[in-house]
Amino acid sequence: METLGIWIAAFLTLCIYSFLYRDNPFYRFAEHLFVGVAVGYGIVVQIHQGFIPFAWRPVETIISGEASPMDFIKLIPIAIGMLFFARLSPRHTWLIRYPLAILIGIGAGAAIPNVLQADIFAQVRGTLTPFSQLGTLGAGEIIGAALMVIGVICTLTYFFFSVEHRGAVGGLSKIGIAFLMIGFGSAFGNTVMGRVALLIQRVDFLIEDWLGTIF
Amino acid sequence: MKRQVPLVLCFLFGIVMILTEFSPHSDSQELYKEVGRWYLVITPFAYVIGVMTLVQVHGTRIRRRAEYWQYSYVVFAGMILMVVVGMPTFLNQTPFFQARGISFGLQSPVFEWLFEYVQVPMEATTFSLLAFFIASAAYRAFRARTFEATLLLISALIVMMGNVPIGDYIWNTVMGETPWTDGTSWARQWILDNPNLAARRGIILGVALGVISQSIRIILGIERSYLGGD
Image (tube, rainbow over all chains, first blue to last red; front, side):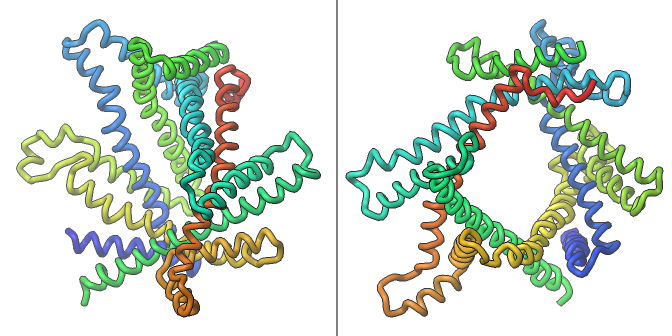
């Protein structure tokens, strides 16, 4: 089974790499198979880790007659979730707004405190904390901390569109662009290295694992 | 009924999530957990919409004999194969499959085999394909015609060279007589920890403020595009 798996994986790998020459039936086959398999995997995971434990088990408990009156409340979200199937009937499609509104409401409500804590307080704390330890920092770290504050303020100024970017604001905004360019450059560099690492891994698979089964 | 009720539901669930987050009372924490459970129950049903749309799109392609319609069968074949192997765990108890050592579900050897030898290789190869296209994109983006493009080019080069041993090898060969060693990886780390982090923090703070304002607009019913037309 392992050898068969290696041959299939190698065939699909070469199918996808054939796109480097040009679009062709082998690439299209692998591309469509990937979509199908990925969606199938998603369905199975959603069913086993989402639907069965959270929706099916409560229904099972009620059917078996072991349910307490409180367990019947668990049927409400299941009924609301089933409203998604209203999409199948053009006259009742509007009903999917109910579960959608609940999901969006929960998401928006959960986002506010979480984003405040994780993205605003934590980032501001991380930017300012080094200044509370100035006495213990070396020259390099002090320069780094100052650079951090300048960079954050200038980057935010660049994204502040309520004021025209002229004079002092324009100057800060230009420094912000410089910081952003360095940030984008390093993000690009990291992305390239990540993709190249994946390429090396695939080539290594073809040479070591696949050709290893032949020679 | 069609618009007001969803807006009220969105407001109620949004407010409950905010208030219960800040209230340590046990009832409040219970309510928070219950609403979270509702989210987990409803989400798998939302996935159905995505699958239905995919089936509709490919079904239409086959029916209309659109260009490359034959490949839509490959999509269905891949999807059905994974579902047939991964779903019917109840068959694991049947004597027929037990006698033959065949099992179904997420932990079944066949499902794991399909994941390991079909899905993972295709995913990794598709992402690695981008290494080639990113190189041509870099050629166009990195023509250092302006000061900003030069900064982008230099920081990307330092980060890339600092990531691989040859970067430090070149540095140590050229700067062999000086006391500074491994300067390329040091420069890479300095860029990542200082100017890069400053820019990222600026972006994160901006995005966070945007998320909060958009969430408030959604909860208050000012932003209602998710309701669609009619």
